Length: 170
Image (tube, rainbow, N blue to C red; front, side, top):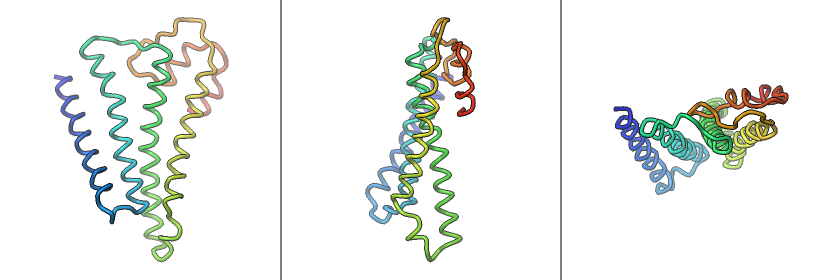
């Protein structure tokens, strides 16, 4: 039942987000900074569901409840980046609406495509730093994580050196 439910949700997510992206690409009236953030939100939602659902399906079909260190870092990078990008996109859209309400006459000059894209890039840089700090950990135990979802917590338990910078970022 879980497999059918996940497949239905995944197909619905792919079709819905693809339609949003196609409409924004095809309609020239939707080329404003706000719709760049909406396009990026649909794109990151499509990619994040594509990053998460295959591993969950793998768990349900083949009972693989472990993940190796290198795959964990890759999985963590994509999941954290895409989920954080969704959060930053919502912040950017909120900022866009606040600027449109508070400064309606200056909105076109203050909210530019360059500003929106730089705010989106800022989110990627923060996640690169967080995942990059995990690569400095040393391991004396097995590098197989007994979890299907790779997060900072299971990685801390495997490392034996100081994890204070990692906890400060996470």
